[in-house]
Length: 114
Length: 113
Image (tube, rainbow over all chains, first blue to last red; front, top):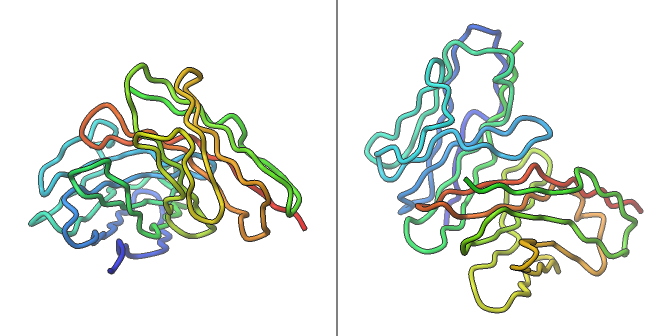
């Protein structure tokens, strides 16, 4: 079974530039999450999708971050314009909607903002 | 909202020694509890989980954790660690409805030869 796929693995940009990250969850997983993991901290939920609808985006900085999940499958997270404090690893995870949903994580996309 | 506290940010230990990584959560209702491991430059992988039943949960790689409801704790243990256990470990709580996960800040386990 293929795992959660993310790209790119690494990205370096200058502040005020834009960046986009892509995630393809495990087939059949209805719930998709984007987490931000700043160095030395635990993952912080940015946005949670159930199929193609948003369940929770309360911690998403909506003035610069946006995310979509077209057709309830893969998802894109965009940052525009980036700030220095956005330097982090962006983790995508997916889970089945039923049961005590174990999260399956991708390898993450490491963003460095200079 | 739930909160998860991992009391130790770093734990150094010698190979073959026992280790305990501590986790406390804030909740007065039933929760599901998880431990995840993160190796360098990788995503998080599930070590073990507590959903219900026996309070002692066994996971992969010889790890186990004990759910203690009265102390709201879910400490992770291994009787004898290996160099390959060097990684960061995250405790997580599933609660608050609709698959909402809350993660602790992580504990870096550094196993020395």
